[in-house]
Structures are given as C-alpha cells and as structure tokens.
Image (cartoon, rainbow, N blue to C red):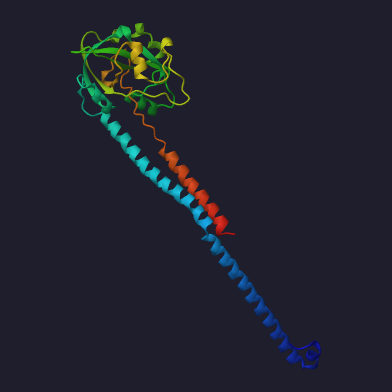
Length: 291
C-alpha cells in the first residue's frame, strides 16, 4: 500500500486510480465479511431449526392437528348417528317385547305397539318441561314470540300402564300440558278408559347431568329421568316410553315429546385442537425460523 508521501509524489490521475483501488478493495473485504457473517447466522439458524429441542416442539402442533382430524371424523360419525336415530322414530312400529324385556336395551328410539290400560289415578308429572313434538317446531318457525302453548312452562304427564296379558306395569309419557292443565281435573275428558292399543317410543334412563340437583320424589320434583327412582315412586317396572304424536287426544296432553338427545361436543373439540396446532406452530416459527 502506498504511503501518504508516495501518493503526494504521484500525478493526480494516478492518485485517483490508486484511491479508487483502495476503496474497492476495502468494500470487497467488507462484503466478504458480511457474507461470512450472514452464512454463519444462516448456518446457526438451520442448526437450531433441526435441533432436538425444535423437533420435539414440533410434535405438539403435529399431535394437535392429528387430534383435530380425528375429531372431524368423530363429528361426521355423530351426525350420521343422529340422522339414523331420527329416522328410527318413523320406522313402522313393532310389538312390545313383553316376554323379552332385556331386548329393550337395544331398542332406544324404536317405535313399539303396546296393548293395555292406563292407570290414570296413579299418574304424576315432570315439571317444568318444554315441548318437543313436531307441531311446536313448525309453530316456533312461524313466530318470533312463543305462546303459552309452545313455551317451556308446562309439564309431561306420566301415567302407569298395565300391559295386557301380563303383570307388567310400565311408565308412559302421555305428553306435554301447559300450566293450566297440570291439574288432572282440568283434562279428565281426555283420559282413555279400558283397554287400548298405543304406539310409543322406547327410552333409556338418564344419568344426572353435571350441576343438576338430585331428584326429590317425595316433593314430586324431577330434574332428570331416573327410571329406577321413578319406578319405585310409581310402583311400576323401570320401563319408560313416550307416546307418539299421533296418540294426542283433544283436550289432553300433546304427545310426541321424544327429543333425540345425543351428546355432541366434537365441533368444539376440533376447533380447540386446530387452534392449539396453529398457535404452537406459530410459536415454533417465531422461535426457530424468524429470529
């Protein structure tokens, strides 16, 4: 490299040439140094991305995504099950299996035909209860306001039913009545006398939902349908059926109060798992890629 004295002794053109060469050399060295630093940082970033810790952290979003996909399949299965149960309600009625009561465990939501007589004097009510019959769904769609006839301020009338040709007495949900008809005296004219044939839907007993109080049979308070408890109270077998809508009698309970109810939280679950997958993959990206 030329000294300052050497530069001064050179012609002005040569000085400019030497200065340009010096600047170019310095810039080249700086570029090479920057490139070296960049390559080093890139190497370190790539090294971090595929370290044991980074790979282990990736298992969290991967597992959450897999669970989300599994919940999608579960949701489709549950919706298909609900559709099948709804369809079963409209299948032709079969004879009530008086001589094979254990088969009722496999007949939930199945329509059955039963011959016998109502023991109206031993009826009791489940209150408060809403309406679930086909008519109330149509009425609800047609109006934003609910009348007393389609509100939940009513009760379900449960009457013991002596099955013909046996000593079996079961419980039959005759249907929903508004508050004004909860008292039996208000609907005596609708009670069927003597032997009748009914069609009804087989139901299964309910377990006590979380945060719901215990039933109080001595006070006639029923928060959920525990058939064993209800049977002891009414003096019947722990068998319960809902009269179909066509069994409704003028001035009496509105039948058809079967509500197909299957727990279905799969949509919430899949949203939770997919959200967890998205959040954790974003955290991984910020930690190991964009740094």
